[in-house]
Amino acid sequence: MVEYNAPKRDYDFLLNEVLNVIPTIQKLGFSEFDKEFLSMLTEGWGEHVKEVWHPINQLGDREGLEFNNGEITMPKEFKDAYRESVDAGWLSTSCKPEHGGMGVPILFQSVIWAEFGTSANMALSVLPALTIGVYDILAEHGEQELVNYFAKNLASGEWAGTMCLTEPHAGTDLGIISTKAVPQDDGTYLVTGTKIFITYGEHDLTENIVHLVLAKTPNSPEGTKGISLFLVPKFMPSEWKSEGLAGMTDELNSEHNGVTCSGSEEKMGVHASPTCVMNFDQSVGWRVGDLYSGMPLMFEMMNRERLATGMMGIGLAEIAYQNALAWAKERRQGRDLKGVQEPNELADNILVHPDVRRMLLVAKVNNEGCRALAAWTGLLLDQRRSDDKEEAEMANSLVALFTPIVKAHFTDLGCETVSTCMQVMGGAGYCTEYGVEQFYRDVRISKIWEGTNGIQALDLAGRKVTEKLGKNLRYILWPLTDFINENKSNPQMTEFNKPLHQGVRGLQQLTLQMIAEGQSNPHFLAAGATDYCRYFGNVLLAYMWARIAKVCLDKQDDQYYVAKLASARFFFKRIFPETLGLAAKIQAGHKTLMDYPLEMM
Image (cartoon, rainbow, N blue to C red):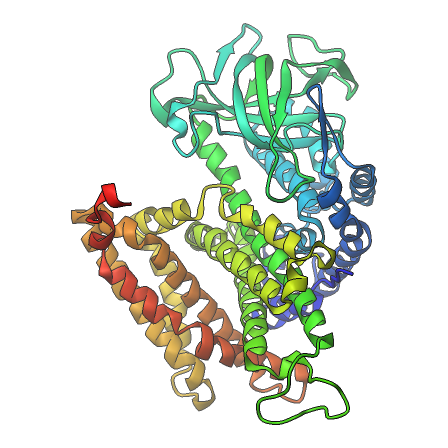
């Protein structure tokens, strides 16, 4: 039986003892958001997904969905679970109160909600995550008439949302899309084209689906500069009038708005999450944002989804770890190499074996380190909206820098962790009955979704570290350097502070080399980008573990804090040293890659 318990204690520790988020959140205007309210939300959501989402996760994997004549039917249990979540208000925590949401900080929805939901049922969690992304873009950039009509239904989860970018011939290179949007006299557009790989493009969990579609208007500039963003619903209001949406009710026309699904992909994992081919045939839509602002707006949503995808890495790594640990506690094989531990048993428990402990601790420590960095990132998402211009600029710079790292590093580690947890369980880990093999199949898409991890690495190395004349980088180097200097004279912190200092110095040197060499030969930067992203990710995790260690040093009368210190030591001794090898690979440059005889590959 697959187990899951939401790591509520970890978030309580991180948010209240390491990051001390409540004063910052209250200063941002959330005056009623206190420690008790945060604890109540975390506890409530953790119990909800455990009781409602988690029990149907394996069922969704086995049954998948049914595609027939352009319609997708979801398992009944998914419909019931989704409806229960809508009715309980759990899908709209960060939405504005005027749209029916709770109005809580983005931190909760983007981090805690995302991790717990993914762990319990990744296939189901994807839909509300996308819908809230559509809601956010609409609420911030849509005309008031559009907001008035669509926002409340998206916020509640009564209607669903998608993002439609990719076309059969245009993936990463969106500048060559062919979907057209022809303006009409009433201010609407008729959108025509085909989009592929559209998550939840068609389903029966909601009565309407609202698509955000990238398209080009007639005579638009070439490339990405000519792309605009359009909101296109599956169904139009039944009383639709061409002069506008004002006064329209939520009652929908039974005929599609020219929006149809012509296929659903058969995939390795997330079997209960539809991946659709969507056709738009003169579908009525409305422009969101200014003409030709489609790419910046879509990247705004995509970056939010990239953070959500990073949380998928943590979520599935966490549930895989919990189940591998539960298995290991019961499994007996062989004897301790130092001598029999339990002579009355036929074999010792496998936790006596160093390699089993190695695998489990790598999983546990990486999960907890990523969770800490995610919590900080979530707080920064709220700080971006601060009235204090300096605070907002700092938060925007760090979120820009962290986004490709969270997406790429967390999902790389997620895939590695789930694979390692399968290894802990041996043959059982490979069998469907125990669930972990599903987590491996599900998590694998996270390295591809929202821009592959190679693209994230290029974005970090080629854009984010040099953006604003390097200001993004300075905003992270300042707190790192301050922390190191503050703890130089603390002998208890030396074992954490010294390797952190070495890592930060290495990061500075590698960054300068990447920029200098990359200017003369972009292949050098591109060849080292993935290793650079991982190096950077490890330095950020080292900073979080050093901060955690500092909090725990004076609290060693409690086993929770003792374990955290042990985890910090494990990170610095067993995980962080990989940065040395990463630095060597970065400095090796591009020649062994690009000079390799192409005809011999």
